[in-house]
Amino acid sequence: MVPEYKPQTIEQKWQERWRAERAFEVTEESSKPKFYCLEMFAYPSGHAHVGHVRNYMIGDVVARLKRMRGFNVLHPFGWDAFGLPAENAAIKNGTHPETWTLDNIAHMKGQLQRLGISYAWEREIATCLPDYYKWNQWIFLKMLERDLAYRKRSSVNWCPSCNTVLANEQVVNGGCWRCGTPVITRELEQWFFRITHYADELLDGMAQLGEWPDKVLTMQSNWVGRSEGARVKFALEKSGARGAKSETRGAKSGTQDAERLRILDCAPRIPHPAPRITTGSKYSPPASTPSTAPTSSSWRRSIRSFASSRTHRRIRPRSAPACRSSPRRIAPLA
Image (cartoon, rainbow, N blue to C red; front, side, top):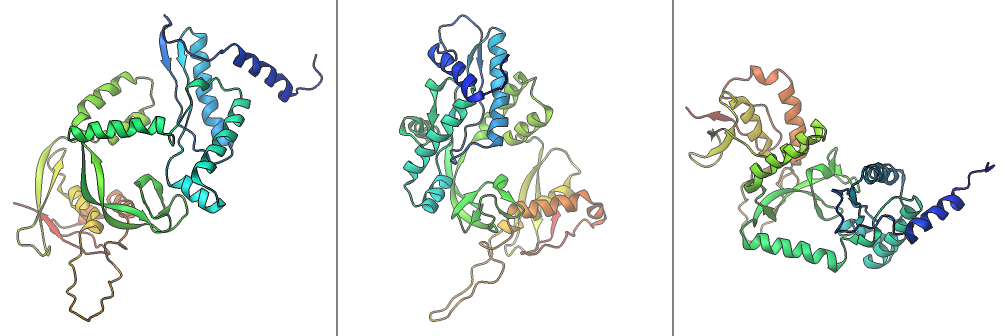
């Protein structure tokens, strides 16, 4: 019996044998049933941490179980290595982004290999390399050719420190998830994809994910965003334009009060009237402008809080809760 367990010796022995025998490589012509196992790509920050270990151990358990059950398992690995985080880290450390990123990938790859995870390393990819992102560009151009990608101006979450757009999920308590700087709202030219063209197909495909948790399926369904129901038009009071209306879709009738909240949720994105500036005059923008208005995510939180209370049930048909920026009262058309 071994008096002391020495992982550096024992694990290295078996990992070298796995590599020599190509234990985790995949033969595409195999007659076995196929199983594809992919965890999220790792961001090469420089060092693997316990979160990496937790996530990738779970995927490894699934991959090994399927192999033992007779499946031909493809278990590749990749690096989410493109974008602003790598650039900011390189600037902070006084090095080139390419050097910083590739050095981190090499270091973290060694750490993950020492864990003995059953990856098909011959299929490793990195999103920052041309042989990967050229296919992203190819797919985008194909979508552009088929009118599935288009541009328009839209309100976005903006971090003035990182100088970048943030997704709603990247705004934490009103601040940037990366640096904590308060997030503001800006209107910029943005690219959009016509995902809703495939809503039915995407939702029907979810029927094949029977083993997925209900919470995850609900998240996926909400992301697809298919809506059904009647179109309802609301009149906007004090909008500055005679006969101005806002149109929405409702799942059923009798939801006008909820839609009143939806329009208030859009208030931070309603443009403020441009000031008249004469020659030689100086203009100081007011405290509440489109660039400094509350972020849409902060408004959503306040609206959800309001909607969950019973206050909105006591609101008269033509009233609405007060808002800090450009309040507008609305009422459904007769």
